[in-house]
Image (tube, rainbow, N blue to C red):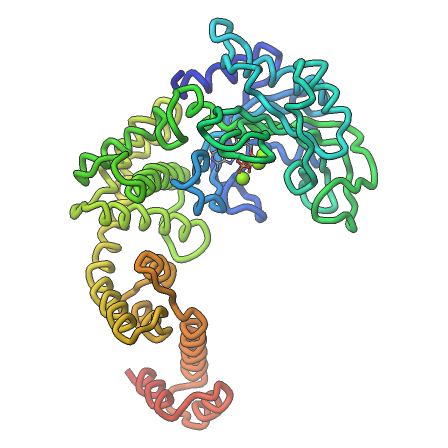
Length: 476
Ligand code: ATP
Ligand code: MG
Ligand code: MG
Ligand code: MG
């Protein structure tokens, strides 16, 4: 089943049950707690918090999500993207646990001919919060699940809250068993690669107080209105229903892997380390395109920095796979073709997206061209000296003179099996910052006043040599 059809069936299922379809919000919302929207419920927060009345009792959406926290998992697990689509149904004081379980069960196990996803009910497992007897009972009554396939988990996994104080509640997660060839027996508690989480149901029922612990239910009250918030991973359902091995090989991302094979001349599936790179490229290129589509441009902090990092990882991985030409414009074109039918903004904004990635790749390739040699020298020197740690001074020079960001140095060092003396690097950075501040202050107090310089130099404890540099810099 194509991803497009998975999305369509989700919305149809809930619209048939009276839910108002709500379009995805932008990835960038005015929410100081979030860099990017990372769940379907984010745009409904005011209704859950009671800050505004919900304009509907029930709603459904497919929300664009970015989770930068999952970046290290990408390519290594079967199931983590940095960008993914979260399909959800929401109840604002309408149905509660029973309704949520009933809806989820009928969609995932409903027959293919009948608008469902056709998952074999024998392969479904669920988890419930450790003291949520009610959910455990409902899974047996409503879905007919045997107790052996209902596992209890503590607050770390199965309790959700929206900050403290604030609303919270137990959750129940739904898993699909891929079979014994994919890992250990024993349900999701034993192995989350074999048992893939597809859907999380949150039962918002508690009010948590200022002293509530970080994890788990310690309600100080009951919400006046009980709510449902769910999230189904569209990419995960796609990978399971398409019979491929992971979320990077579905109809939406496989075309990027295929194009990368053409651009690099390497084959996906031939070498495990290369395969991780193919998957990282596919994942990150798509995330970058979506994020630029929603208005982010590369920069040195916040969202812009996340974007820059994603793009740079694509470029580096493509290089390592043997590609010598720029790749980004080509690959975002593939993303546009795959994602465009569901996300027309990728089509209309394509020229802008292409321009952004083209410029970023040019700059980065220039940085790589100069810095890589210096980096290789540092590696060679370190090895020649019998060490395993690149000195902080080398990392600093790479940063300061060649524009090599420290995370790039760290990443490349790790690939070479080396560490970096990050502590020494940081102190050099601090010294440089102090120098710049002293410089700025000196400038403010007026050029020729040697007394001011002396004061600044004494305060920041700089050496005479640096003092000379500082005076010199100011004079030019
Ligand atoms: P996991 O434990 O596998 O990391 P999660 O518990 O962090 O998932 P939730 O916060 O419950 O995920 O999000 C709801 C649903 O969104 C999940 O059940 C899953 O199907 C999907 N999902 C979560 N994170 C990702 C991701 N990085 N890539 C693709 N789908 C995801
Ligand atoms: Mg997670
Ligand atoms: Mg989970
Ligand atoms: Mg979950």
